[in-house]
Image 1 (cartoon, rainbow, N blue to C red):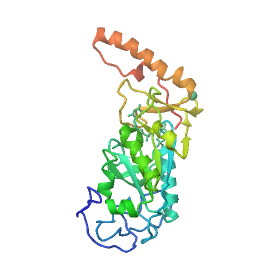
Image 2 (tube, rainbow, N blue to C red):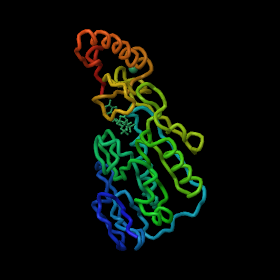
Image 3 (tube, rainbow, N blue to C red):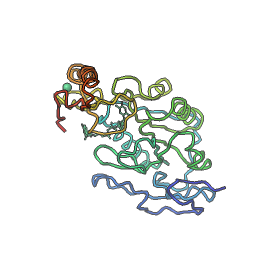
Length: 287
Ligand SMILES: Nc1ncnc2c1ncn2[C@@H]1O[C@H](COP(=O)(O)OP(=O)(O)O)[C@@H](O)[C@H]1O
Ligand SMILES: Cc1cn([C@H]2C[C@H](O)[C@@H](COP(=O)(O)O)O2)c(=O)[nH]c1=O
Ligand SMILES: [Zn+2]
């Protein structure tokens, strides 16, 4: 049976022995000298060159432990969610675990082949529209018998039941460790996707904070600087900024909402459009 190990890589049927591979070496900053090797899963599965499937030991049987783990990492944008996920994945791999990372294919800001932190650190990943397709793409045999740790980034973009069921089954029934990174709240501080639904089934929940782009205090929330009101709007620092409570309520979203109301009424008269951020005293983050 042909199993596509990754849409972008040709399926290969072969046994590979551990060897360093450019593909399996994430492009990390120099402070992270990594030795890693690609490995074969087994002769039925295909190309183990997919960089997100890497392992230090080549023939370890996956643990048969029926009870896995779920670790959830949330916070505003720029708070270190992807960085934390990356650190944990690298640590698991260094301890000899088989790891794979998934992210939502909605996030195409930096790369479709890797998770990328705002500081530019990268790790190869599977960029998918949903989680249900992962086992088939990865290879059912390899998933069941080899894979031990799964990282999920941009988890807010996966569907409600999709994320919950994938993580619950992986940890409760398949003995996998799942590390989930995603926004808990959107720019209006409302729950975003179903990341928060994982709290009752999680081993740990970590809420991170950034630094306020106005005063340098605790950046607890994400302020959207533009006028769009749709929940899903892919973007980085050009659209979003971490802010403290004071500057979210007083100098941030609240002000933007007020300005939006003023502009919408005046725009309907003038038919002009204006960037809301220009209507509000612009604040430049200290970054
Ligand atoms: N306003 C900002 N604009 C751009 N980068 C930022 C800003 N605030 C913090 N950062 C950087 O973003 C890094 C965190 O990146 P990342 O782990 O990708 O965050 P997250 O996944 O939570 O969005 C921080 O270490 C910091 O260097
Ligand atoms: C607050 C908020 C964010 N988004 C988008 C913007 C980015 O593409 C991602 C979050 O990226 P991160 O830096 O890895 O946290 O989500 C959105 O669509 N809607 C929002 O309200
Ligand atoms: Zn502030």
